[in-house]
Image (cartoon, rainbow, N blue to C red; front, side, top):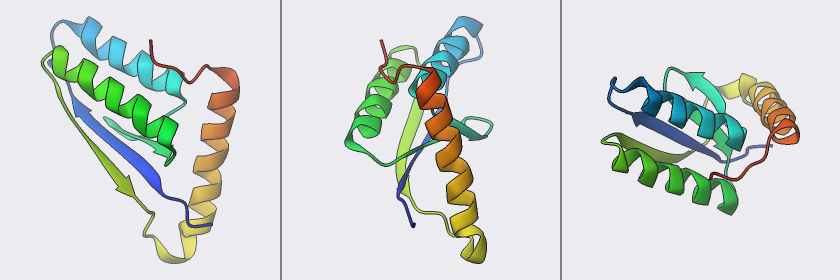
Length: 102
């Protein structure tokens, strides 16, 4: 398989909490999968990259910071199994929710 992934990391001010909720909802609508705290992942596609870049601009407007990485899993033997799990989660979420950021 060996898919490329977009890894999106962000930080927003704690107050007002509505900013954190706003970002979380946008990520969920995109079908992004939460890896850890504020680290989210989507398969590398031009559409995903565009949507993450738009969200990064929104985060900057509310006083936050973000970074977007292109990544590949580097876990040796478990790589294909982990990729299957992540792809299944992304596919399930994409089927349930629209992908566009408002």
